[in-house]
View 1 (cartoon, rainbow, N blue to C red):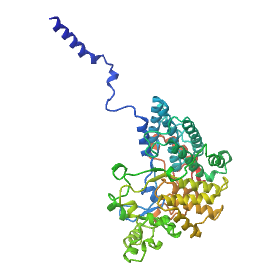
View 2: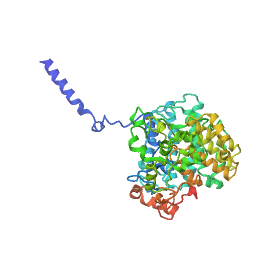
View 3: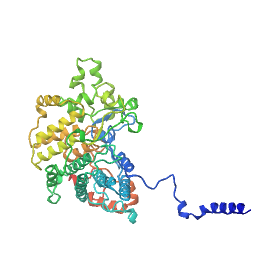
View 4: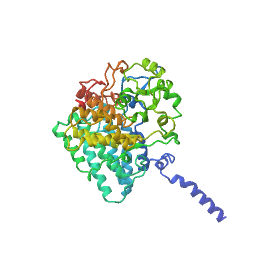
Length: 502
């Protein structure tokens, strides 16, 4: 009887145990974690920030044209585009988790977070002009209507952050504890390559400020010179091996190249090479022509001897031409497609450079040409072209022979003509990579000249910015209107000139 009574008491205690838990303990969803490892967050952030080839941005860079006059458009009838605050929230979360976990293994996430924030803010200000920065990401303190920072202050702030990031990375790597970080599929965790990227990105930011180099307080030239002149403190990419690139894998559906056999029937026949790009290659009898494009169908059907290696067999479509003309030209076999083997045969395609060695070479060459720094612009110019050709598998001796046989491509000196050469070759190196950098260069310098015509849908003009998202008017109306008044006289206009390009 005592044994039965004891069983009853124990059973009662067991039954009552769940009731001892606090009500709040039952509110969490065990299937929905509230924390994520910094490595996992970093992977997601890098996916969100990557730029792709053969997308709308690359068409607007005038690298390709559409000939499909039923659905497609050749217009620059821009409205709004997205901001990066969603990505910034994930970066903020990565910082929080790295601090919570602590230790040397999490320090790199704090350094990369600072850099990736700058990447996001630069992306936004290049598109819109003024954007919230100092008061942004502060909803935890009930600031849901952050003010817009002036674009000049954004550049000043971001450059300071980049310098701090570079020095922090130097300190961390100098301690020789570790030089790898998990969750990074771009550099396979190599922090030494990240260090070079941070400095290269700073050069990109500074060269984009070329119209403001005369503003003494900004010290654009001095900052540029300080980086290039101190390679031990500010190392830069040294070859294509240091390219910041997305590498595609056709065996993984989520990571296969945007074009490929799976999209061939839908996309290939509807898209042609752009004349601004391809006709520049053929004008210089550039061997990259044969790596990126297919001969026009008329050259194939006419069976011209050696047509594959004749530059006259390659022709791009004009971005400004109306779709009906492009469609007709394509149907008659007058326009080149993208190279079949390179872009359509497999799902691997080619790596999509986000910021590469060739860009760095041309950026330094431009700085020398402009008199910002001492140096040999011709040498950097040649290094940039060679790096771009090497990317396509073109050997150094082929580059050397081509340059010797092409006087028009030989550097004309530190003058306006030499600058045009640098900008053209930089544009050619941007083909299908680096997001909108080719367009930003055109907006900043006017070179190379973009094709403008009736298909542009913006009064025969290339727009200079994007409109602010409608969400901003709905949630932050007073601040966005103040920013518009300060920049453009109150009008949200795609043709408005932001501070950077005035």
